Length: 198
Image (cartoon, rainbow, N blue to C red; front, side, top):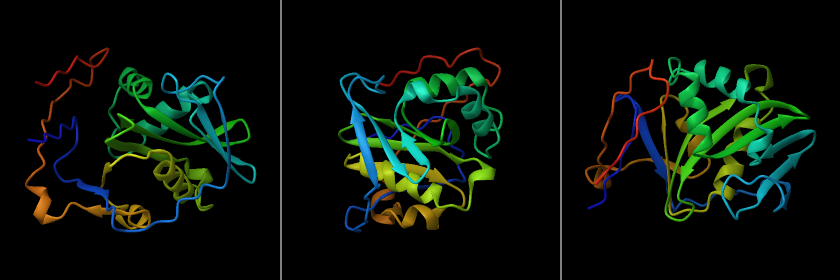
């Protein structure tokens, strides 16, 4: 029995997964790794991809926490999420920052075991940086970096964007196999409660 546990996902959102039969081109331009940098996962080097003056990096030490909190709280899915919850979620995720020089202009994170499963969430490009293909490049980069059997996400209106990179709606033949446990977390809580499954 495979149980899929999701916390805080509204019921009207569509869940999509990567379709392994759909071939995608995921070559995120020039990149380098540096094992000496502060890596998001112990023993795993951070990675930086470059495209012109823009960079995408998994170096968590580069993240502008104020930017991330502000941008996440402006989204339709997390407008009431407290700062402490956002910071905690960043600490527990593989994070991707998008930068124009030293200034952060985008963000995304994956909750993943790095082998079998990843939950892609909080994908954001700042309003003033849109229209330059950065969102597409960010998804392309994430799919290339997060090499797991299944990546899932939840979206209201970006199915076309994600579909370009192999994501598809959960088919009726497999939808009945998935389950979720929804926990309502008080938005005024200072920190997220400990959640256990068993």
